[in-house]
Image (cartoon, rainbow, N blue to C red):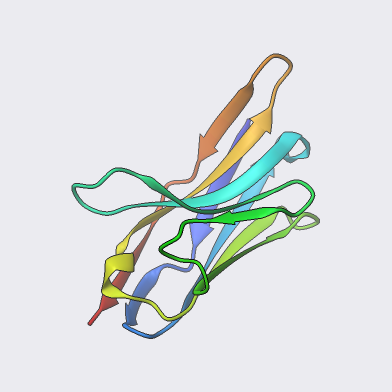
Amino acid sequence: QVQLVESGGGLAQAGGSLRLSCAASGSVFSITVMGWYRQAPGMQRELVADVRNGGSTHYADSVKGRFTISRDVVKNMVYLQMNSLKPEDTATYYCKTVVAGVLKEYDYWGQGTQVTVSS
């Protein structure tokens, strides 16, 4: 199993920046993907960005050019640098990891951290 703990959420003004951090512990040697999702009230949870073993990244179109995901494999951390924030970025942000098992992959989620962007 993998435990995930997010930090770094809070309140920002439009145009501002925030940096989210996620610390992984447990069976981290089997992690294949680490990423960030978000969920706004009344909306479905959506992928924001993820990073795979080997370093390839993927971003939602809505955050391309504004958000940057990075991973520190040694520290078992993943970060999301959020710049040029918009009110529509307001949501609860969740860290997620995919762990390779013997026959299947397993998803693990953090508890979420709130990001609120004021106009």
